[in-house]
Image 1 (tube, rainbow, N blue to C red):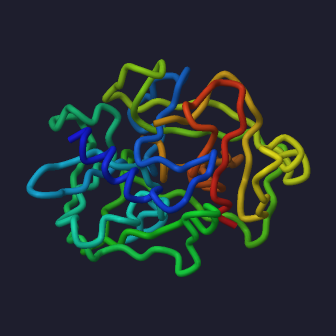
Image 2 (image 1 turned 90 degrees about the vertical axis):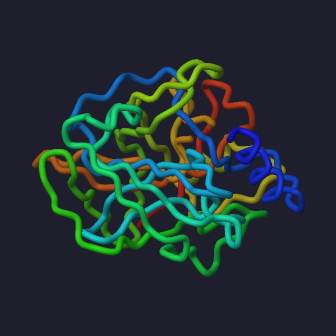
Length: 255
């Protein structure tokens, strides 16, 4: 299955030679184990290719039939992918008897990629997966709120979550999370690679020891609200290749 992941990445980037790249397998390094019901909006999904299931990306529940994710997770899979398997309410993805965990399988055509998604520039990295029936919300499965249009969310304390590599080499089936802080567009532009154009569509997280890396792609960056709810302000998109700590991470700005 790992061979298919690498093949998909290679196909996506054969024409776009950029230093910072989105990856189908972005994950959190130096994160903490999540608790059941802590992130009820979080999902992870696999895709089926040639009757094999491949773990792909994270996503965010934003409605009874809608999952928010990254365009780069699904771009390049047309014609190859048969179905999408979505895990909801999960903390331990490998435990199918876990309390609260549900699985929904949708057909390959059940998603929409932003019409202005640009792989080479990595802008408008956003997509929606449509579910065939309404979700029944409970303590384990809840939607995140959407932000106010054009809100900036600079210098915001936020949380990023996802499954995967915990030290750059070892993967985990347990949901991880990390506390991070966003920075302004101006500061992000001054810190980024000078050879790459900056876009206001991006939302940047300040460098720290916890970074998204290879499976978190498509997953949520959220701001906690006073009432305990969460607003999804970013979608895990890309960062410096190799996922070194204390480097910028770039998210698609949801607003």
